[in-house]
Length: 204
Image (cartoon, rainbow, N blue to C red; front, side, top):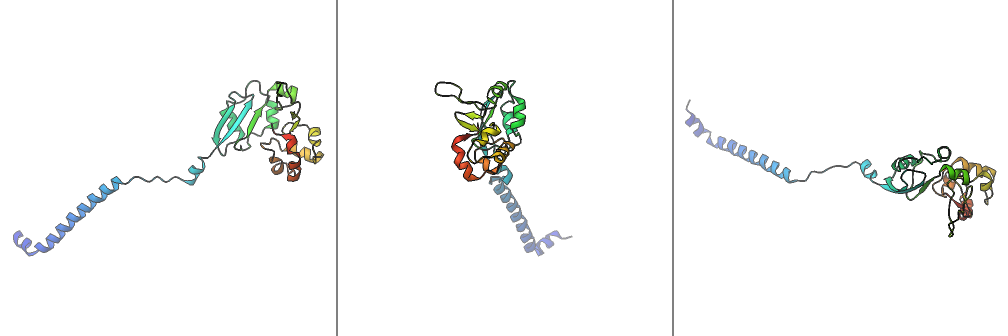
């Protein structure tokens, strides 16, 4: 076969094909080099960004490692106890089981106090405060004259303005409280009543 004749006859077509192959090869090389220079884009789901939010909570009393802890925003009291090393040997576990809801979600800036067995026997729960002279000022649900809504008795709660037998029972049934405002949302105490008594009550 006369290859020289064939090449001579189709040299234009062969030139076009060869040029196309060269351009295609250069295009592939350029694309790969250009892709290597571009930074990789990482897509982060909305769940990951939401999980980055944190809160700070203070836990004191009969725990192994009391202090202020940074936790994820959706943490619960049980998570805080785990971070604090759990209850200490002095903790009144019966009081905790009756008054602390371990599944309750935490709020930023709250304080949780775990009483010892001695405190519960002497003062009825985490109701200790000191005066300027260092004397204990809280006994059985009161702190320096304020009623602790987390530990007060039925009679102590009923002594508050606007709180009768039914409302006092509702307050006790919905313990514990992380803020005074939760009397409205959890115990369904009217906001007007809470505003009237908020200077006479405390949560720890």
